[in-house]
Length: 192
Image (cartoon, rainbow, N blue to C red):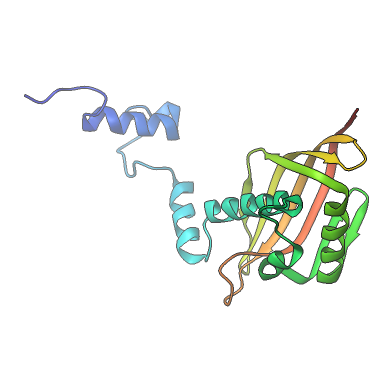
């Protein structure tokens, strides 16, 4: 005996439609016959993912990887220096931090060494990461990160930073390449 319930085909289809469009919980004369059980923007997402080197989650994973590497910049046991970033930082990277600008790879290395020389340690808590597929194999990533840092002079700083990154695909690389990196201070606290 087959049980009728949430997972019967009619009920499941109605749930899928309700999520995509609450007014379409069940096919009616007003809505016409059901042509697709998923929204049009999902079909477009699938097409984009098939045509692009990276999916949105590939890009999100990459952002998390970069921040994990930043946190290892002060680690004595699992140190990650600036050269580890070389495969995915463009030669002419443009970085705009609130009080520090970077215009190329050499300046990125100098910044990395400067900031990590001041820190005992730091961490990053990322909010939702929005990924936009741009033209010509490019992506734009937008998110907010809470950065907490303990400095060697004893200061503890916590800042909420809004970030927008510009990334691109490159055929000979397995990860996106960072072209631009803009960080705007949303909130800053110095705790003693």
